[in-house]
Length: 84
Image (cartoon, rainbow, N blue to C red):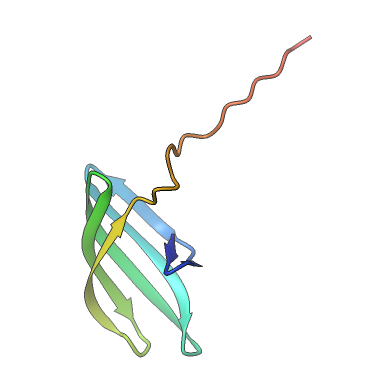
């Protein structure tokens, strides 16, 4: 995941139907902060709430995300090699 061009690690990801949840731990103003995201997928976008624990921005906020235009297909590339 990236926010304003900055990569953020994702953990505890879960997907069930159109519901998505995951966590991210980042440093904000010298303090480690855990953010827990919950949202619903609708086409190429996600809308939900984020619970920011600790830190200067602690609280619950609305959030949205959109599929990057750069990402076309997330399926892994397949490679084949000849045997024998």
